[in-house]
Structure formats: structure tokens, C-alpha cells
Length: 255
Image (cartoon, rainbow, N blue to C red; front, side, top):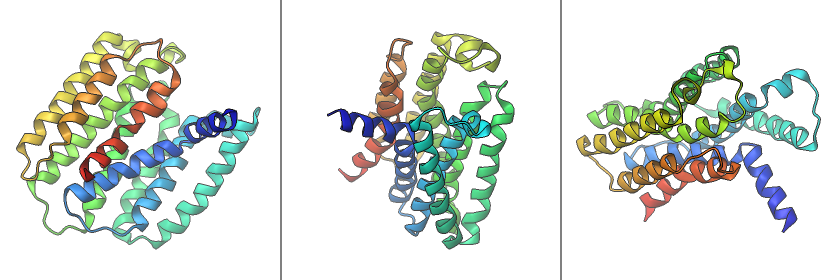
């Protein structure tokens, strides 16, 4: 049992769970809109996501070159492995995919320089995830219908909403100079902001040509997660349960 808990914690801490969640968002776009895409791209996204999130989470540790725990050392090993996997699969992609992926990666690299503008974090992350999970999968489509524009807006809104619980829980340890949304406007206002975005996400589905009933339960679930977020919640509330929402969304599409 202890070994399973250690493995589960490492699965989360090494951003592997985030990687599965973001790949789920790619597949949601593909299957919901009958797009044709090579399996190389989702694999590349998985490796790139794990690499990018570990870079953001452990930037200071990697920068110092000091790894005070076996956990950090193990994360470095995983990050090195996914870097190799990412480079290999990236080289297999068509140029139409490579260019926007490089641009997205540059945005991730810039973020550590903007740590005093913490409120930007969720918007930058949401922008990158939207590009990777909606914009790029549509790159092979010659004709972009109105649903594409709605998908872009919906994805950005829902990623921002999913990040609200993280912002609130992180406010316990974030330095005041980071100026995150909860620090600037308070927890209640931040929750309300996330709820409004989630409701807009649900309403936008009504304007699609190919609407999905799965959006309603997913939207309601996110509303619940935001509403019940509090500083007393443990790390699994966000790092596992909230991050599992895209995985559940993908499963709903199949059933």
C-alpha cells in the first residue's frame, strides 16, 4: 500500500497526470469534430506537456542545480526522458504542426520571467493549451466552420476555469509579490469569475452545429469544483481530481 501511494504521488508530482489530461483535450477535439490526425501528435503533446509543466514547477530547482530530495532527482530523470521522446516525435510531425508548437513552447519559456505578474499565469497556460489542443489539430482542415471559432473560445474559457481551484489553493503559499487573482481580488470574487466563465462555456455549446451533451455535465462538475474549493482542501483535490476532468470528458464522449 505504501508503495502504491508513493507511485501515485510521483505520477502526480512528475506531471504525468497533467500529460494524460492535455492529451485527453486533444482527443476530445479530434473525436468531437471528426478530425483526422496522426497518433504521433497526441504522443508528442504528452511528452511536451510533461516537459513544460515540470519546467514551470521545478524551474528554481533545475536552475540551482541542487536536488535536495530523491523526488526532485526522479523528476529530473523523467523530464530528461520525456525531452528525448518529445524531440523524436516532434521530428516526425509535419511542419504545419511544428511551427505553432515551437511558438507555444516559447511562451512557456517566457513565463518564469513574469513571476511578478502571477495573474498572467492562468491566461498564458490557457492560451498555450488552447493552441495545442484545438488550433493545431485543426491545421489540416481546409475549411474551418463556425464550430471551430466556438471551440477555440470554449477551450480557453474552460482551462481558465479549471485553473481557478489551483490559484486559490496556491494562494496559501504564493508570495504576495506574485499578484495572483486571489491575492488581487479575493477568493470569493475569483470563484465567481471562474463560475461565470464556466456558464459561458456551457451556453456557447448551444450555438454549435455539432453540439455535445457531454458539455453540460462537465460544466456542472467544474462549477462544483470551483464552489467547493477552499484553503483547507488537500493537494489531491486539484492535482488529481480537478485535473481528471478532461479525462472524464473524453470518457463521456465514448459512452
